[in-house]
Image 1: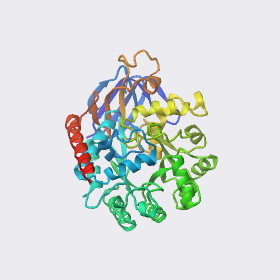
Image 2: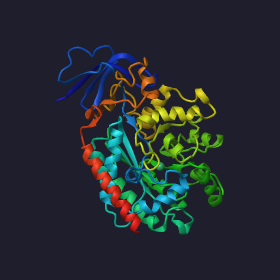
Image 3: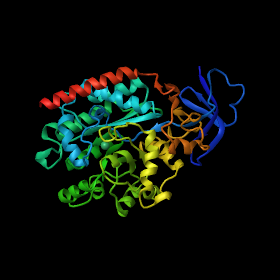
Amino acid sequence: MTQRTVIENAAIATVDAHDTEHASGHVVLADDRIESIGPGRAPEGLENVVRCVDATGHLVTPGLVNTHHHFYQWITRGLATDHNLFDWLVALYPTWARIDEPMVRAAAQGSLAMMARGGVTTAMDHHYVFPRGCGDLAGTIIGVARDMGVRFTLARGSMDRGEKDGGLPPDFAVESLEDALAATEKTVRRHHDSSFGAMTQVAVAPCSPFSVSTELMRQGAELARRLGVRLHTHGSETVEEEKFCHELFGMGPTDYFESTGWLGEDVWMAHCVHMNDSDIEAFARTRTGVAHCPSSNARLAAGIARVPDLLAAGVPVGLGVDGTASNESGELHTELRNALLVNRLGPHREAALNARQALRLGTYGGARVLGREREIGSLEPGKLADLVLWRMDTLAHASIADPVTALVFGAAAPVTASFVNGRQIVENGRLLTADEDAIARSTREEARRLARIAAGS
Ligand SMILES: [Zn+2]
């Protein structure tokens, strides 16, 4: 029997195609779907209503969609804090190469818990470190997301260009081309669900041009298209990467991606900071998506991505936390604000982004980048019931009249409730699906254990 949840008296930002908003409206959830949404009270005579929520003082938005992350980095936060990307990677690779299954489980719990209680309903993890004999890391991460009730994409990463082949990672931290492809295919076949409303999807995701062979890029793209899944990698993050590509491949990153089959509407790429006009035109022409990670880009002094130009060209853009070794906060709702502020430091100044564009990046934009805009990313009848109730009547926000402005420009807003597939996973800022205090303890223990092992190696 259908079970309904009725939410009333809320300000609502639907983030639909017309940016429809209601100063005081209702949302009706029926099982895992949004049944109706609109101004005023919910329709009379609804049957099987199991819950009524008086959301006075709240803003309801679509759940946030994170499009780039590395969960395992939760246990290596706060290290190499004054480095650029390449120096930071070289400093951390030897530690990362020592991760094992209990460490990855704890780190995935920490990363996911932090995002979920801040309004993320769809998460992703780009995991690319698979030390020999480390167990089933992909299955472990997917299990954590399932237990927490968060919609999830695992981007099964890989690295096969170690130092001896001119790459950045140490040789002992990389897989062979054959092993990487075989393990990726196995993960897709075992875990990817292509159906409407899927809770778990898998993408093919070699790490970056400076840690992956050209052959793995090429064959990875072929594998993804053969299996019908999406492709993800890092691109055009720093000036050093651009230099690396010119020296090794005789071309810039975007041309290199195009030459290896890595531009297309089934591809999304993290960062895309150093893009010239023809790079942006190539992304727009091929509808390649971008995961914009403003805090990480600032932390590693990478630069400012040209988000206003990407949007003007029609490129799909979502937001990403990035790994928490380069964005220690691990939150996505604060990236709405950071995306807006960072882009206003660029050439477009105050016209770069507004509050509603920032909210769209973190919701519908992310859904588009993950290829799931028909299911999630906006509040519309028939879409999945992934939504957040942000509390706007406390000290932090109550004096700001416009709730979307309050959400984006103001302090990180408290989450009163968060729903995924109609199931409530957060209540009054606390996770209902996991024990945050137990996760805090286990992540601290695993971070210490990793530091000890890395120091002894
Ligand atoms: Zn990253």
